[in-house]
Image 1 (cartoon, rainbow over the protein chains, first blue to last red):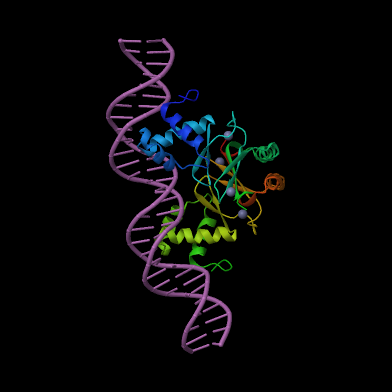
Image 2: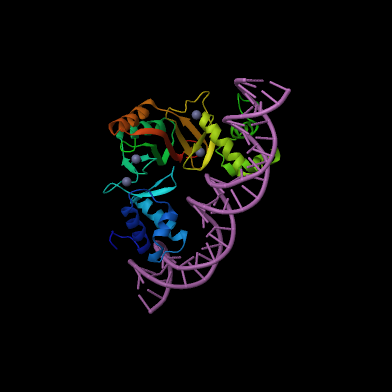
Length: 129
Length: 129
DNA sequence: TCCTAAATGTAATAACATAACATTGTTGCG
DNA sequence: CGCAACAATGTTATGTTATTACATTTAGGA
Ligand SMILES: [Zn+2]
Ligand SMILES: [Zn+2]
Ligand SMILES: [Zn+2]
Ligand SMILES: [Zn+2]
C-alpha cells in the first residue's frame, strides 16, 4: 500500500485518479484497471465510496466523475468548491470561508443541518479561452 | 398552452414538475405522463432541455432530478442555490449575492469564464430533524 | 485458534441519458 | 398561396452510470 490504511482496490483506484490530469468516471477507472485484475463496476464504486468518505477523492456531481483530492489533508466537513473547464476538463479545487459562512448562515436561519454540499463552477479556463 | 410559448410536451412536463412537491427524475416524469401520450425518454429530456434553458426548471445535479423554478422570473445567469432535505426530499431554492460575488471573484482572478454553476446543500430540514 | 467485521468477487439488473433517423408542425417570405 | 427553413416530435436502439443480491475471502482482536 502506498497510502496509509488503504486496501488493494482503494489504493489502485486512488493511484489511478492521482495520475490522471482530469476527472475519471467509474467506468474510465474500470477500463484502466482491468490489467490490475479489476473486472466489475462494483469493485470501483466500493473503493470510491471509501475514498470519498475519507476525503482522499471527491465526486463531481455535474460530471458523474471523480478526482483525487488536491489538498494534503482535505477535511470532509469543510466546503470544497470546484472550477471545471468544459474544454480541457481540468479541475481546480478550492475553498472560500466567506462562501462557507454564508451557506452556514442560510442553514442556521432555517434549522437546516447540512450533510454534504457540492459547489461546481463549469466554464472555460484561461488557457482555453 | 397554459404557459407562455411552451410546446405541448414542454407544457406537460412543466405542469407535472409544478404539481410535484419534490424533485422528479426524467423517468418519474415519463411514468406520470404516459397517459398523456408520452412514451419515450427523449420526449422528456428534450422538454427538460428547453425548460432549463428558459429558466423555468432546474436540474439538481446531485439527484439527477428536476424541479420547477420556484421564482417568478429566475434569471438563468444568476447563481441559484438549493437546499435539499435527504429525508423528505423537499427543495429550497435561493440565491445569495455575496456567495455569487465571491465566486465571480475567484473566476476573475484566474480568467475563468463561468458558464453554469451548481450549488446544492444536502442535509436535513428543520421538520425532519 | 475462533469469531466477527470488513473487504472482495461475480452476475444480473436498474436507473439515467443520448444517437440516429424519419416525420410533422410553424413561421416568414416571394 | 406555395415554398423554404427551422423547430419540434416520434420511435427505436443503444450507451453510460449505479446498485442489488449473494457467495467467498481476508484481516484483526478476544
Ligand atoms: Zn480535497
Ligand atoms: Zn481549459
Ligand atoms: Zn429558479
Ligand atoms: Zn425534510
